[in-house]
Image (cartoon, rainbow, N blue to C red; front, side, top):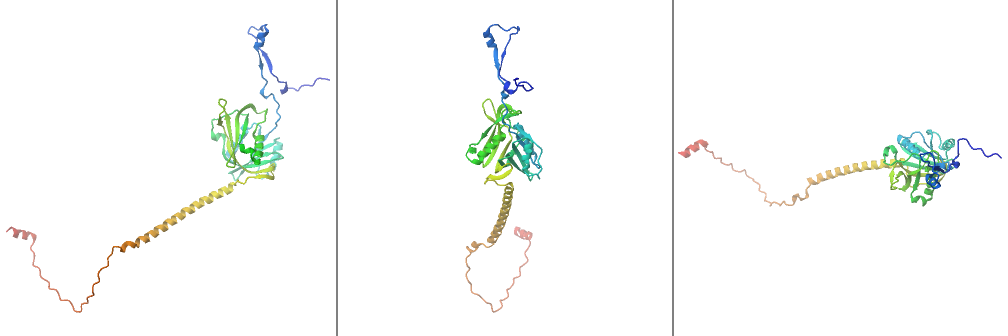
Length: 343
């Protein structure tokens, strides 16, 4: 039997092994002693990416029409930190969500991050395992992109991340399911062609206030401290479905409040404040009018008044006698009086 033929292009990844290299002196002749030869020989390790790429996870990241610039930058940041991701054109709003499964099949992807925009202000994110499920729908809040944050952290493009999860993910079944979805979606497969064989950043998923907080940190080599890179966002879980982009509901978040209800409550609260201010103004006007009336009717005004003695009533029956008017002599002027006094 003839020996098996090798493929073109040189040795495969399995044929790459560690090599021994001999250092020769400048004179061109190697020393004869075997001890010196052993000292001058050293081993070159095999390439780090010599292994075989077996985990063929591919994530499709795209969105519907109507997203704003912040969502577009967030999608680009996620593609940069996930080398196993693919991009696609925006999907029309009229198409149903089941079309996403066909798009993933065309792109040869088995995971999907789909951003759905509504009313040009609300952003929803679907994380799905296509085409059989499960899938989860989130409301995305507090988005901050890499260009907006300008953090001091930095990492190698294409490097593989560590994933850190809150201990609450292991306590409740819905969070355990989401943890497995996040692991399969955000973790870069080993020996991926576009990935680098380094681990220098970490994705953290923290549960607080019934929401999932996503952060991306750089791992510093010197002291293993963490410096934030970005992006950052908050995921508010709505529902978990059994199928991909639909199907029976496995879990529904009882703490979720739709953005429309939240805005309605904000408007009602603002209207209640306005009505309260008007009521306060009316009460102040009422108090002012009451105060003026009370000042006009002073109760203590008659305290120091003493009653006068009653006099008998005298009625004159005859006319009174006329009074005799005395004629006054002519008075001299002051100058004349002064002259008389001097004499």
